Length: 493
Length: 95
Image 1 (cartoon, rainbow over the protein chains, first blue to last red):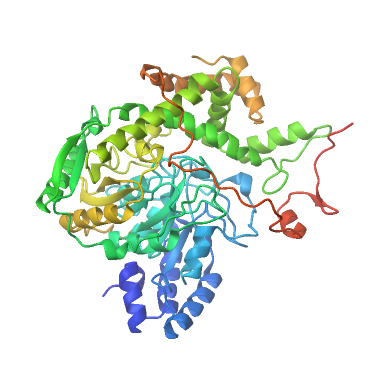
Image 2: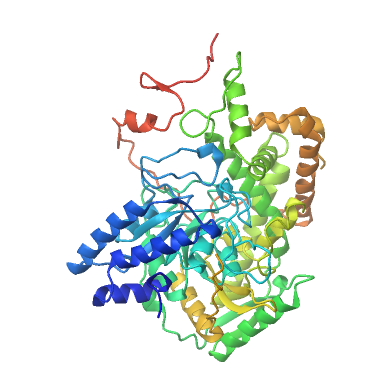
């Protein structure tokens, strides 16, 4: 028998509507799994009382026949989202004790639709990291395990990935600035979609790099991603880059028919030294889409190689500006001052104590590339390269390509601590297949497609045309069905 | 472009992050490594390319210049590490 916490969003919705389960039952099952899942360190602030209140309200709505799709669905919320009255600290000590007086637009929309919040989820500090090892709460741990090592769930949305893959919740929110939804989804065998820039409101989401950040759902299936993305999307006057576009019915777009669609395979993504397993996975995925009737075309995205260096100029530049607000005055941590310390010492000590090493590193890189004399050489040049990267995609889509298939990550999940002595750039290479999508503002989705030789999940990424999440999800739906990925981690926690 | 210790000290100062003198050489080395990685961007021909300002072709919306909220002093000050008499309190700034 399937336990209620193991249900998909779609199955839970249908069970709720048929009266086969209540939102309180579902929530209780998830709260139990959440408490039993402490070994994963995925939930870092639990809100069981709020969850049960929300579940009771959801049951009343379902009974009254006024139940949107997400009504009564228990979710985990990434710590990056501001949730009213509930700790929201972006996994940073500098926001210790911060309880927002407001609710992010995304969580407002989900809660207005009746979704239930179980608690806040672990992540890399300020979403800066690819392994969830920069968190002030300690590492989140991947439920997948093949030997005595603890594996990373990926990052930055590592807690979200771990909680969904470990069935602690039905689905979770994530955010993606350079791959932070798609890489952890791939590392844990779940689905994660980063929508087109502007599709989902950024208001109330702690900002990392504002021109790249987008929130999205992390779910067990493509159908669930379609359902939850619909509830998260839409125009928000409070976000000046939010798109004034109607939100299509993403679930209705899952026809399973991609005959005649053109799938691009970008040759530049075939990196030197790419593991044979990843190459084989990519070839298998290509064959699956071809068997489903799609036309496969070789394409070129010639500036791909420059995406990572451009990203690591632009993202830290924006971060250094966004994170200037953490100064120990209005919220969060303030350092204890020595006699005679003035306001500059207060800023410097507060920020040295409050920010972890990776965040400090990125703020300083950003400060440097924006400083007088270097702005043109680094920041402006990176923005020009970004324009060229976007142009590569524009040309491919103009030539009739409907979606692009690539690997999601250069490897399966690695061991926690294994990169501790590596150069920061080695960690940045995790994002090599995903950052291009953020730089070009496109939608991208990671779909679990197979297991590696050791038994760890591997994912592929599909990239869609701007605003075509509906088409992208349908391609992902076909890939998911053809791959038939049903493996689950063995419970050890 | 390699970053020397003086530049690392200056960057830390601009970023308002206290870095101990003993830690500056390691910081300079790390920052140099990352900037070295970025040097690849110099291989790209960017002549005549406009730097991207917006990833989607859109104009930033402007809202009417009117007051939309207010009278929420208590909420604003709620999370302050040191709030007194309706203000944020900071160390003395003006002698």
